[in-house]
Amino acid sequence: MSKRARWRRLAGLGARFLTVGAISTLIEVAVFNVLYLALGWDVVAAKLVASLVALVNAYFGNREWTFKHRDRRGRIAEVVLFVLVNAACTALGALLVWAGVEAAALVLDREIGPYIVNAVNLVSIVVVVLVRFTLYHSIVFRPGAPKAS
Image (cartoon, rainbow, N blue to C red):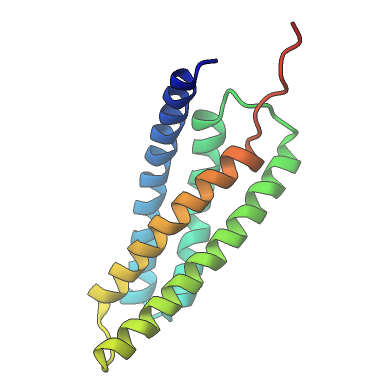
């Protein structure tokens, strides 16, 4: 496969991944705001729960659409890898939210409001999306074995 064809295929994967991710992000942001603003949860707890809720959509969207052409190693093994990757990514997202909120409060020398908290949350989502795509592409939904000629 030529370099150009590989880049086109990767771009297609990326576009489908981003579509699934956009829907998952809307779910995550909505749940985060309900928990944080409406129910008064701590930002880190709200982030963790919101991320986990969005994962259900992300798994099925990526397995059945983005990476449907990839080998299936068995649903249980794949789900275990998916959960492990997303546990690490969820922890990374929570760490980024915590660090961002603390840094913003330190820089502004005051308690920060929901707009800054949400800006920090969105930045964390962008970082985690890049990490997730890399790990989904290389580990969770592995490429098929090379075909024998």
